[in-house]
Length: 92
Image (tube, rainbow, N blue to C red; front, side, top):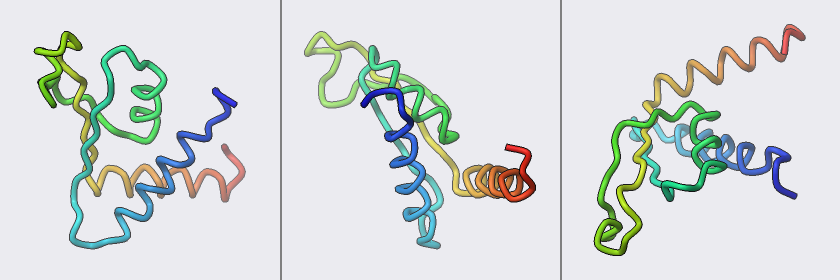
């Protein structure tokens, strides 16, 4: 089941719904440092790694700093419009 793009599609659907709400301008995400698959999904949907954070005492628990990602509404909607225009014109 892994590696079929299911998580990416779910993330896109979630972001589409989230950004359908006009009062939301930014989305944040945090994942485990060693979870490369999750980091890849976040990056595929346009999220940018901003910094590493000590969340939920991750450092004290021996997990280290956790990667913190963010995505601005404008950047996401622009990326979605470019992808949609390519798929309509058959250039995907």
